[in-house]
Image 1 (tube, rainbow, N blue to C red):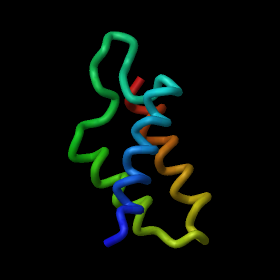
Image 2: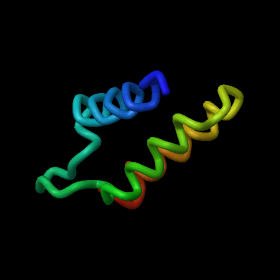
Image 3: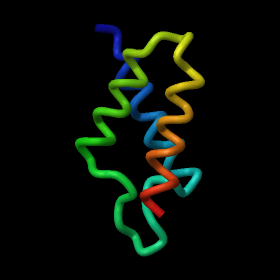
Length: 67
C-alpha cells in the first residue's frame, strides 16, 4: 500500500548491481528474473527474526551455483 516493498525491491537490485552480483562476468544474469522476483518478495514478506536465514539463502543462491 505504501510502496515500501517496491522501494526495497529496487534497493535490493541496486545493491546486487553495485556489488557486481547481478550478472556473471560474461554478462548473463546470475539468477532468472522470476526467481529474483520470488526472492525479493520472500525478503520483503519475511519476519525480522528470519534475517540471518534469508541472508544465507540469498548468498547461497547468488554465489554457489551461479558463478
